Image (cartoon, rainbow, N blue to C red; front, side, top):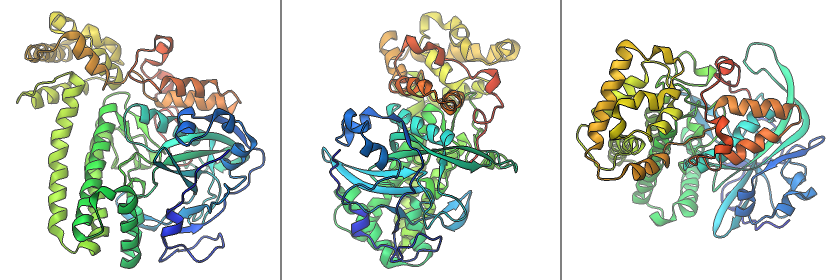
Length: 520
């Protein structure tokens, strides 16, 4: 097994001089060297063929003893020096100080076909940033991360990727619902892959400590390797850098809104500087359309990270990143202009995204109110977001009176579609039919465009839970079935039709299916 390793992060940035793996505050450094923890009896459960290819590895490589050892933390890649990153963050709106890679260990950077990939093991043991935790991960959270990061990529959402999913062979103690009942669970390790795992918090911690020297080194490094098109470091370049991070963040969140993804824990340490979805913890997919929904039990009271608030939180987090970068620019005006551009961009991109979901190619001044009326109707009774928009592609001007019949499978309580609710829906379908008369495209062409942005299949929480339940018994077939299914989320795939269904009633209040914790 041969990888083309070209490390930069741990060669060009200041390292923690202390090599002992003890919990501590790490200052004037961007990372600490650390080795993964050896595991008892590792077992490879699943490997992504696409990511193997991206790294220049073969299927035979993935079945080797070397691969198993390296990607479960039992061996170190030749000519590599694993490390954990130092960063801080605002958690649920409050500054939390130093956080860092508490259970992620970066193995190396690999360059293949002119693409740089950082390899990171999640759940491979304690680091100086683990605080009171053990640095390990359990099977349920690892399956969710592995499946979701690849599913998001195939949905067209910017995301970190996953190479492999393995059992460590060790037992890990966790209190799933934070209710004082910890139990042992199977330990697991995911190899996450991304061009970089840099987060807003990497910059925040240096600014909070007034370490302008290291802050400048890190920002210059980031621009050199990931934003080189912006030019050599200067105040103008730093402003352009922040502007692009802002644009990428917004684009990512618009994609989340499009597919009904709720991240669940949008702390500043969980936002990627590259605009990638990162840290798949207590995430969830909208089943019933609901702007107020969040899957995270920790956020149940204030719902800070609810579906409808994600664009606002993106902006809030950008304010915090701006505060961190301010010492390099020392002028508030450029930041204010970028914030305004984010707000205006959200209005425009959100409207464009909803138009695409409705198959509208032309622009009309009344589209905003048409969309508002639709969103109001979706809240009248529990309505499955994924099924509704997918089925809506079958609607056309000729069958305007059959709108409710076309989308009926999306309603969780069909008997509620009567009286005032039925009247409101019929009025909307009539309005939508009239709006479609302005379009010049054919029904078939519009259906094709709608089905290219409205997925048929997403990783519903209960689907992941079924894979987890079987895997816990040693059966990995559902993991592979979902992995294959979610490679083509916009295609019909009739052989997988059973997954194109509303959340079953048994999953409504089941742990892991409706509400999730950060205990992973």
